[in-house]
Image (tube, rainbow, N blue to C red; front, side, top):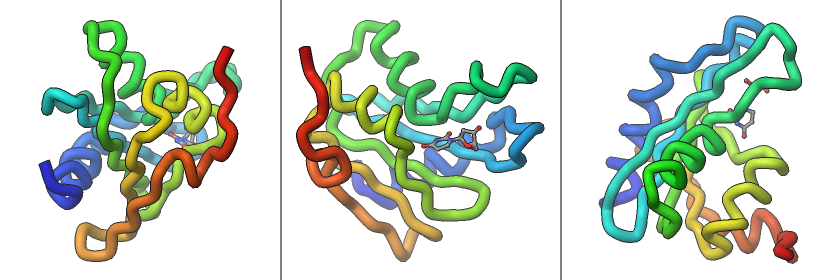
Amino acid sequence: MDNKKLYRIAKESIKNSYAPFSNFRVGAALLTKDGKIFTGVNVENSSYGATICAERTACVKAVSEGYREFEKIAIVSSEGEAFPCGICRQFLYEFAPKLMVITGNDEDNLVAKGLSELLPEGFKL
Ligand code: THU
């Protein structure tokens, strides 16, 4: 699965984002080691703190379906490039400290960074 294709899937998923409070819509596509893709969107809540980010939605969907090994995640927002927030970095680190994170303003201008670069010395019990 190439980065462009994964990015396109993330972008397509934005249509399902529920972001009536921030209007900042995010889509993510998480690729497992065996080639399965789980999408996720941000799901906001009237109690703002209950909001879940797109990256964690994708990860929770995968783990709850029995997938724990991940290769890459593509993320895109309604505003273009979107790197994961600190909580999502730590959340993804639990399962995939070597994850590749892909984002960008469009599919011809993608940025790819390792989670180890985005979250040096992540926490693990
Ligand atoms: N958001 C994500 O979905 N992923 C991130 O990594 C950053 C923030 C969402 C949460 C909220 O719905 C909106 O973006 C604005 O913070």
